[in-house]
View 1: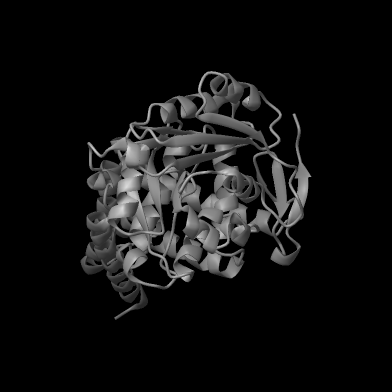
View 2: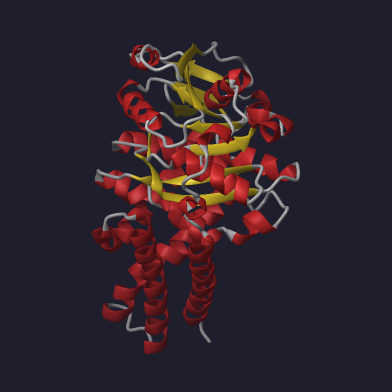
Length: 398
């Protein structure tokens, strides 16, 4: 058996394994609404503190607050921390707090050495929260009326210490459509969801900061956001903390519970995913490079090899069939993902282009993580070359 044939057998076998995991994940990734029990007496429900770190979110915060004030869960407080914003974030929140006693605005303290901005903001919020449950959510989210009540029901019915709900991601521009859906797609491909609940190992855990829900006593026992103060991916790392301390953690599909539009243009997409991808591999360029090559081999290479094998290289029919099998599995997984998460169906035909986006941004993120200019987000750039010396490189004020 020659090298090309052997390679394609191996590639197909790996895709079959990942495809099986993908299908199982689609079965065990439950909607958070499955646990919603309507008609529960509101007077006896625990107080939920909704905590929103907001830095330069003037354009998003109004819509987020309006959606939270329409919750069908009555016993809640909403606290927004203005994280040294330079726009009208504070003014926008004050307009709500002056009319509704449930909304409170606090001013964030200046960022101190050794902390990343979001974790520091979340820690400050947690220290003044009065609720038995803590919901950390982003200012660019839009919540359905059942967002809080369904999370409370899911937490209580599954006896969890914490949970995370994955929002439906809204994508408009081509750049968003090519990159944003990868968050859900590759989790479904590579992460065995059933082990998030069943395994005690923190290795099998993930989360998204757009919706993190904790029992307050659990949050305090694991050390709160102070325990992940140096982590770019504070959401994933704090979910691992929950499991390290012996509490149960789960993720849920929030496709019918909340929306979010993370990025709006190519610049935001590159900056956002550059900070995420390098951090996901703990700033190890060798690991990141290996996984990037694996993604190229499994999800882009078949689309390049197939026309070459048919029209130029005159490869044997067996090899062509193996490549067709790889293309079929990749496109089937992408199609199922598009249908489940309600992305644009025509984007299935742009799947190879989306892999090109991913590879480019992965390379860019590896370079930025080793650069003195640092990893940039929300007007701040952090030097992440040495975690023990993590610090703020610069902070922009506009």
